[in-house]
Image 1 (cartoon, rainbow, N blue to C red):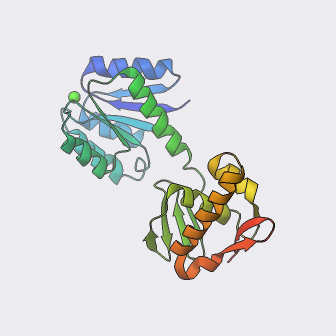
Image 2: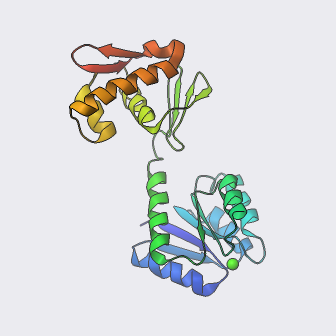
Length: 225
Ligand code: CA
């Protein structure tokens, strides 16, 4: 059972969130001030933290910093809550590294969608978050790609394509498998699209373009070293 911590001083809101999460099958912990919240976030392992910003004792930003400083809670995703609708709060929260943000009042349905989306993203974490291969480095969390340590802007399609090939380096990948893995299906139109994407991808790889080989009659391969 996945465990979620709610840090919110307004008890009726905390109870409403807890009710909806429990009904959806999550186990819920609650803290009603910043000091207790920070302590629980660090000492009680949870899969997700819902953090209100206006809190007695210690405000939400201070709690968030503490959560991120401690190795035990550093990786736990955080959804921030605030009554203030100002965009500057939203930006500040996301820049601080919150995984998502909700402005009060919000519907239980909206909250559940955010919770599920954040948990789904962090589910992908176990195992290799970062894939390294030769000059390539992929970060699956933020979909960033680095070539010899330098960030290279890839579209999400290019990222998926190159990652798929890299995780199977040395083995030629059939065109249809590539299409299905990236676009979800294969047909003639997408078959041409695949080649266009591969061409653009190679341009972005510059001097390392040779890492992506065309395998005649099959598809593509990322070389094994
Ligand atoms: Ca509050």
